[in-house]
Image (cartoon, rainbow, N blue to C red):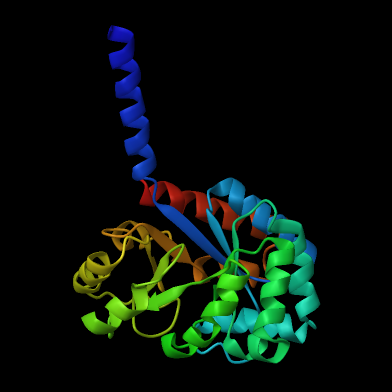
Length: 266
């Protein structure tokens, strides 16, 4: 009898521990400075505690991104980035790492959304994050995403009304991307997000992750009330730091990832 009680207590404790496991999503720009670096970095970030990787598709006008990621995009494009590079990296990492493609609508439109989803299925990519794809337009692709069993991540922002949040999160999958500041990534602006969190929770059980302005200094504050954080500029700034060797970049980014993962779960 005592053994049963101990075992049950242990199971409950383990369950609670898993329930409190806050998630870390990490963004990196694909193929910067090259494909092999991105592959090595992705595996190192997973080892450091990154749960999901946002593999960024370089684009010339990343409207939702701050100066760090914009600079990384332009460097990658100037280095000759092509979609075949994205696909090569994806083919190497997605079998082992939970990966989403993050990019702007233009490349998806020109290559073809179904062509992208076919490639995603081939490599094991879980879905997409497309910041400039409005909810209404995303509905046009809903059947395609269902066909290939892929997720298009939903965005909510502090400027959204309760009625709009209800609409956006109704069929959300994997996680909901909450914009921490109604502007661009990498900004450290503060704002009261309690109302938007309350509204999302009212209409959806999908995990809610916060992005924009999250780093090793802000993550403990940002994680309050949500299920995970999305970190981009805090990683990418080291990728474009020319004073570091490639090995040093990987070590630094992995160290930051480990620190963030520990802090959000304290």
